[in-house]
Image (cartoon, one colour):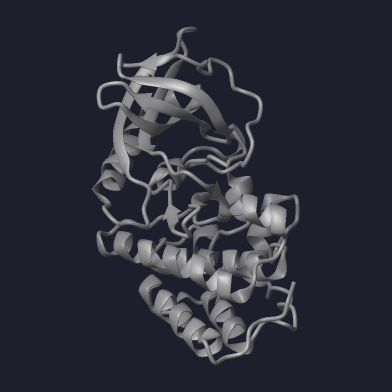
Length: 305
């Protein structure tokens, strides 16, 4: 399966003024096929005709692209994201603002095209992942987040749709900075908070400052979903979900999850940021240590589903 940055695993209906195949942006980026559509816009497989390089192109919905205050934030965050250089981060190559053939405004990000699928697709298909595989995937994601945090960039929207799994087992984190640009946009504009609410940290949910510890919490929520086959708080009402992240303890993980893994997930999901792993790097090191201790060649293997 081919995929690239974006939340859904299959395309939804295009929005008004959306592009069509063979559209060329700024006489350079040809759009070949729509990969996904979500609250912010669409993701297309494309071609950089100048360099002859396949790319992923994210097009913003007109309601965002016509909002100058949003575009100011988005341009700034695109610059921050373009600074990130790490094997576990999907690279940002370019940014531009154009009008579609129907004269709808749009802005676009040109990104590395990652062959593979988002973690959300793997979870939809497999329901649960083994603890060892979860630790491998989220350990890699945590390493990438640590590199971003070291440059002062907090992701703010860590979720399965933003963790891309390549066929060789490598993990790429995508959509850095986009969530921050959206922070001040109204919830009702596109309902974008629905997907984010499932993984939001208590401090982000309550409007307190977002820090690297917020990304660690979201990693913990993704880890929980991988192990349990369900999100810890899964109401259809995003307000109920956000309140649960602030006030409620998640249901216990399945009994077949080793206690060391359980302890890491519970600490990452602590309501108090000070009680979480001290950094994304610390989460990655803990994940690697647990994998070595439980799944070394002379250790027993997990017998779950």
